[in-house]
Length: 469
Image (cartoon, rainbow, N blue to C red):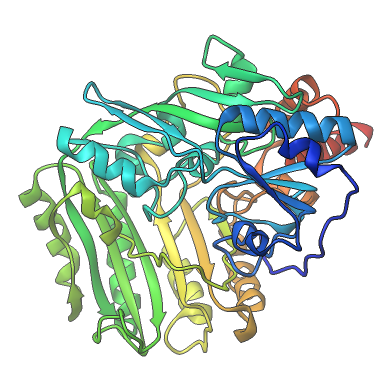
């Protein structure tokens, strides 16, 4: 099983001479006594405090290279963070490179974009819209492009258009040896493979170039039911989704939203079931298909309609404010009828579940097809993703383990790198199969011989332990 439980982080110490680094940067260096340190090091996931010895707010790719070279000279490790959505405190390193200042963004009308490592999906979506283009962004446009893409990138159009990583043309990176490199299928193909699914194990990405799809509008959003109708609706959703053409991607989520500003009154203070839907074909056909589910029970709130792609966040309705939550996940190789009762017994309306969200995504389609070039995303045979999100003080982490234990018969043993960043041996072996882990380790040995990159050094250690065994 996989958990992303909160950790108590202590500041990583080093006696490195930071004035030496400051002298060669256009960016800034901040130590814990600097008021800006806390703001810059704070991740979106508030349960994962980052406590490096110093935070380096870079402004250029050369700043990243100078920081890595400085770290090599002084025996330091380097972590990287843009938005901190996938933060793991143990991966901060001595020097945490914050790439938010790498804000380059160019959308080409021909259908591709170049984006700096500090850019989130929202400005990309907005810049692409005048050309009728859409990127393969995540379920919320508030996450960073680079972190999401290097983890594979499974979004609301995954069954139709595949992964964000499948659309990458090139990366600009700084490797652990301090070199600036351009990485494509022809230039450093070993790195190109590792960066598409391997997160930050092999290099720090400073910019990425990727293709987009032509999609000015889509039909979609979410239809909400009372959770007491969940068994009937999910049963119908299960067979309906299996017959769904690849033009549609869908998921369902059990929500328990508090009664607070911003939460629709129909959803506040109760458990509801949301059926999410993104349809890229004819809108009338999309409506007809979703009507088949609308007919299964009384609808509490219907938010599905023809939308401009700029409203894609409406499909999942994920929060954008930083949250003190835990969000573990697993992948399933099936979801038969008996799994519905099993899931609802531990997460349904009469279960006493403390979770804010329990989500099941239907996969397959373009998601399941191999990419044009080898990659490090080794999860295409998964049929579903199961995610739980809740507050740790309410016992959400322990309860998530109960959910996953109940669903163990369908657990395929793996997890998406974006939902379970590799930070110890157990999470590494769930995020990657042995062959992929060995490839990542070999790339790290080649481009980071001194083990400067924090996550890369760990990947190499896990592979070395496996080889020794």
